[in-house]
Image (cartoon, rainbow, N blue to C red):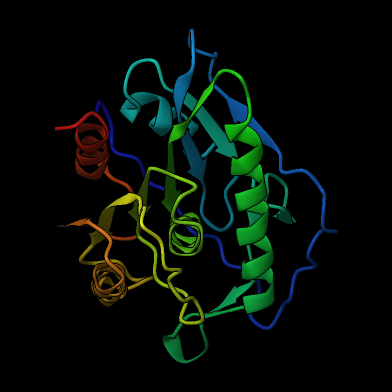
Length: 231
């Protein structure tokens, strides 16, 4: 990786509840050029305050050759080119989220992936979610509640929503869990808890820590690239 990636979190004003878009509104996305044949897919879910372009170049760099890369925009607009999946505050330094908005976002991502899986150029058995911060939170939410929908998830600097329960299934995606030990936003302890939750639910987790903050840096990006390519 030629350069480090600094993915920042932009928080809405404390106490502000941003409106949820109407159900059924399609999610905006961008994608790479379609490979020949039925291709594996890497779906990118950005963090709070970013947009669909934030992870797109990262996805193109880490995805195995012949992969369709799709970056999705969160549905709640916070400002110009700034979007979120659900409202978030930090009272007393601890994250508080709007559970209703988080569930609505989870359902919309599931619907998006199901529709994507039906496309003739997509290999429905090889769909990977890669999320940062809120995107990681929701990638894990999909993995726990729809374990047969995706084949793998990459969780960067996220946490586990406490209201989630794992669904029983004979098929579970494999998981790469990455977190910076100096993360000041979603602290490293969140990743430790996520690792425990997933392992107790029967998921195969590759948990890696980094000397980093709330970011995906060059070392993390290289780890993702190697993992996705079987290294």
